Length: 427
Ligand SMILES: [Zn+2]
Image (tube, rainbow, N blue to C red; front, side):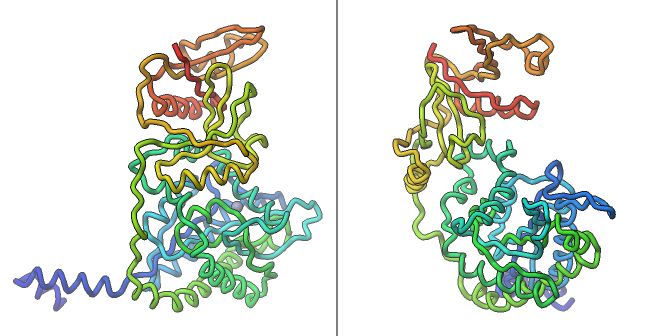
């Protein structure tokens, strides 16, 4: 009240500065809460006599309860990747976290094990690291699978927007420097689960995209197994969710009290020296082959963000895209390490208009003609058909830039026409 009156009268500028310094001195500890899955992606689920618990609901309930506790403490600022039953893409989740310059990222999940006996139970918390064993690989596969399904993520990585630094963060930030702090919060969380009577499987490392792409200390918490009856009952109940949220909350308090002082004192270090972007975008050419592979095929040896472009009868499979030299070199190394020994980087001029020729989309290839009532022909007008060596090729659209054809490809995916391939026609 006093300050307001004082401000209102005269010393507006001085007052503004005062408020500015007071607020910047009490920088809030920012936490991004990510309720795993959501919307069409229900996550792990199981049928029981008492109902059908779904991972997406459990994670949201825990996050909302945890968020409320944190918001009631004035030291914290909470950012949610979702507060309702919706599905933000992986990139949307991590971009939000990175943009908000959060101090901590927590992704909440529910586990399920492959074994039918359902003996696996308890909690485990993951921090980013190399896959250490087969079991962790399974978790990585399950949680990463989401992005194979995700057209939005594909688009971000297929048509890199040079004005968006976020799309680079994924590849640029070395999670290593956050590992120690991630391990701290992870061990506090598991400690509290155990104190609260849960069975803790401990803190583990796995190569999870959601952790790798977050430029801050990050953990992925598996709050229990949906295919274990006791865990499922516990996590489905209001009380179980509240207990879980409280245990995580207490771990955050302990972690923040150690890091709050350090965070306030240490002015956010400017990203070392800023690397200047190159004129061209660079993709890594993995292979040229007459074989058409669909997205997620084992032929890609686990690499994501693949863009196939067909030219002169060969499919060229490109991996990732960047306009930073350091990232390009890192991508090339990733590809070679994955087993593509002859991988090379190829420059693309952004928004380059083809002088001759055009891009089109190959929407179907097969020995049989598409019936006129097929989904593709019913939903697309002016589909072209060609026959060569007894095989029918159906193409759609004509664009002069790669960016435009990627956009068209995305619109087809939204209509449910997947696995179309960009084709470069030279005349
Ligand atoms: Zn999950």
